[in-house]
Amino acid sequence: MSFFGFGQSAEVDIVLDGQESRKTAEIKTEEGKKERYYLYYDGETVSGKVNVNLKKAGSKMEHQGIKIEFIGQIELYYDRGNHHEFTSLVKELARPGEMSQNTSYNFEFQQVEKPYESYTGANVRLRYFLRVTIVKRLSDYVKEQDIIVHTLSQYPEMNSSIKMEVGIEDCLHIEFEYNKSKYHLKDVIVGKIYFLLVRIKIKHMEIQIIKRESTGTGPNTFNENETIAKYEIMDGAPVRGESIPIRLFLSGYELTPTMRDINKKFSVRYYLNLVLVDEEERRYFKQQEITVFRKADKQRKPAAGYQTHRSMMQHNPSSPPRSEPEQVNTDNKEDKEKE
Image (cartoon, rainbow, N blue to C red; front, side, top):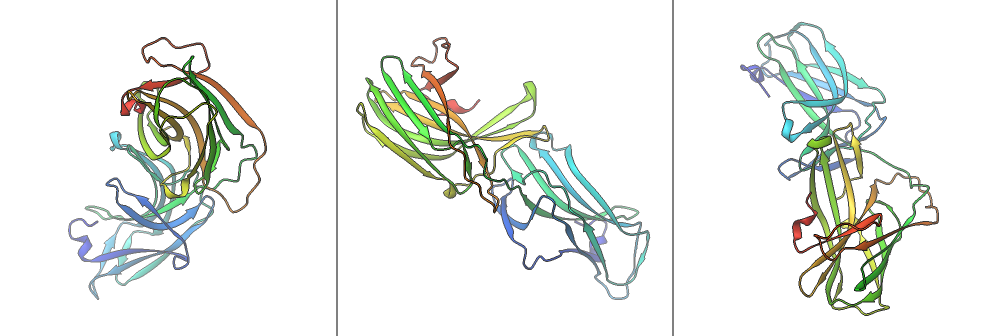
């Protein structure tokens, strides 16, 4: 970035310590392209050098001070004028003066708190970056360099299986079970589906992974749903007593960890959606939230046990809800999921 010809007189370069051996990671841009940056974790020190190089030998550059900032911010696309900063650290590199030769400045932000994972979504972006500012009388010169932050989690001590019974009264009764409720990004979802009663003609069944991004608060909350994966688990009519295994590998999909109420600005949640389609193209589906996390190096065995949810599918979407604690939705349209 340059203003009023300043870019013609000097260039700024940010060099991070140890960047030759530091891991990198990819993140999507708003346009859907992938960019690669250096990877950091919460509590890591961010340090390096800022090189200010004069383009012409023998030239001089006056400035009103040079500083570097480490910033973590959330940008909501519908409110682009306001950037919500949750981390902001500043180091002064040089006081006002005149520069007559190429100069390097060391900087260090010790054990920086980086509480959230870098994220680019449909309506929000969370980014960390270094920003060098050379203050000029007419207009400042600004150079930014992004980094990526990953948040790590241990294996949860309690990781109950999910067991659910769903059905349409006197027509269909299904029991299905997932082996866990919390999965790391490279995990495998293992489960089974049991058909206890089948009196309708089911044509096909699939399991979906749905990502729900929520931005805003209260009445201004907006949900954006994206179907990350579709996995067909049955094609044809099942019979009573039939058991169908499920094995879905998460490593093949672009998932992020579950994010809940990040800085009171947005959330990202994941759901397993079981979809049944009958011969008249009516759709019956049941959602169950799962937790996705990024696995740390240390691993713990999940504790045994499971939790049971009972619910009844409603065949008619317009009928009043029953008194069961959970309802399974039905609809003939693909986009019912969008809220």
